[in-house]
Image (tube, rainbow, N blue to C red; front, top):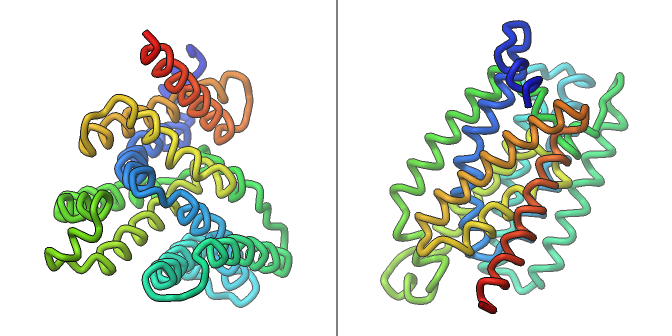
Length: 281
């Protein structure tokens, strides 16, 4: 880890410090929103949103490079498509008679297909690999400030609607009887999930986004006694996975996203085995 620490202190490597700082501050929404994803059991919905994002990324690249709309980039496309997917999934869940899993599968595949078509028709060379598998080392200063803004948004919204989200996750029918507009609250939750996923894609990519969104929260669920503790522990685990993953990937010259996910998966397996051993004793 000496090389990793030396790189952090090197004034000629500002991108590396941005990557580490972004990973640390991004862990806040990952931990908080990931907790709701795990408790509410909407991992597949989050997966559909994340894969739809490639469609927005491809559209942003096409509009920017082919049509000359310079103000609309991949990030704007990803945000727009993620929010649109959230609205569609929320409406289907609440009102439509279609099977929810069928709609999730359709959005999942259509988003990926549309994104690849847009990227193929974009002039020049556009590498989809950084979006599919992530590269936190490409994080810029503007991305870092976007993370800080998302931190403020997520903490503010969850702080204000904490009890409401709690009722939605554990007893939606009771919340509805108490006069809470659960449909709107559910839509708000999915929109927060969407914004967090857009950020998470820059860290580990579309393919592995669900792992980092859910594994830290799943591990934290084995030790936490309430939702707040689960959020805090999930955030801490996420920070550890990202920092150690970055350190190992830098020293071994490996892609950062997959290494981060491997750390999270090993920790999850260790937590499960540890809880079973303790349970038998």
